Image (tube, rainbow, N blue to C red; front, top):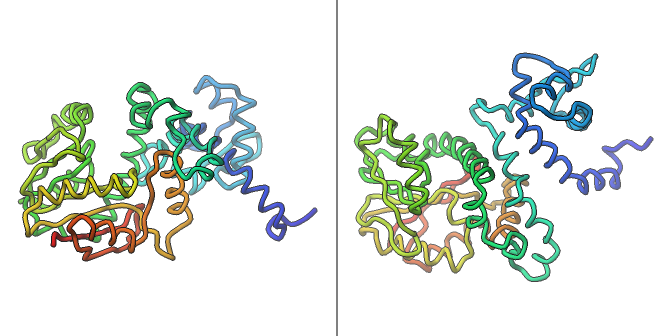
Length: 337
């Protein structure tokens, strides 16, 4: 038998079938298999009974994932966690459980069926596939929206640790989190900077949810919640404004609108902080695939330092920093000119 490691065709077969892995990971994450294995190895039949699914089908999925190193397969048909699948447990500090589940949901998955057309036309086919933008679709699909929200919380938690460890916020008194959702990053920054006040700015339906989720938070008195659209206006006069995983959602033209809106609200001594993936030579493969995913989904993109610099220069900023960090985002800092 040919050694797969030295067989280009075998390697290509693995790449071609990579989407099967993605769906397998998404399914077992959604079922909660990794959580079920936290207390030790179990059989697929035991877990299937608990989850209400087919034991043979579950066993075959787990067997395939075990070959990839996601699980260990023991004697007696028992499966166990590995360092890979530990990241799919709900309470892992860098959990990607809900990211795995959400990326296999209809809103993210089905637009990829039009990858050929995306390459042909150079634009997203999502409106044709979903009949709406991703955000409009999710607003009418509460289960998927819930998983997506949890996935974004997973990503925020990973980003928060890297951002707060590699950027000094101590001289900022008033910070606006533009498109800040439930304020995960802002609250962590406020926790570490007791003299700071913050604002979460997002769409009205998002702010309604944030008001509920933040109601009993000990830092609630230091946070203002403001509803609106960053295409129209943002709260004015703050020391700093931050955008985490926002600009990558949008085309260059749309980013210009967002950045001009923020620039108009900023005093001369303010600063802008952008937290997105940065396409540099040492960027991991997932950053490049995330770039393609944003194109497929909604004409968004990840950007190089030069691309960020050009966007910022066009909208009245000078980029003062573009630094990759050990996180799913980089730190891009800019000042008004």
